[in-house]
Image (cartoon, rainbow, N blue to C red):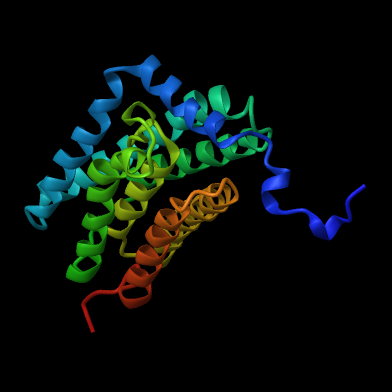
Length: 234
């Protein structure tokens, strides 16, 4: 029997990388063409926010949070529970975490005093993450020599959904300490998935894990400079 220190993280992986990526292909095939709708809706709502502060922008922000709640719940059931759990028992716990995030996002839509952030730097970081999740993250499949059929799309796959959520939370602000704490709690849950996904991808030998790390760094960097509840840039 080999000594324990001779094992590598990949030795504990419960599935082959090809099996993991195959789940996305099966998922996309089963949902076609539904998976094209969430990215389009996300970009349309983001465009309304870019138009500037006002009732229309704040309405778009609330609709976006509600849509994200639906997406987290859908990903929890349709991908994590139905497809990922059969090859990774830990996915059941991940699904529960996604449901918790969905409920938190749904609760955030009813918070009075919610608004778009006045911080232009934070808005820029937020829109970058949203654009990445909707437009560029699916292109990682061919970029890493996988068929486009295995692309991960916002609203139906975990990683781009989490990246978009980090962006949407960045563009959201609240006037009270309690509401800011809710924003932080939701951000921490999203960042936790970034860490889990990055670790999984690195264990599979995929450099794509750096993408999730980069999304976490962008989010944390923006919040370090322009934290939730800050009234104006400094």
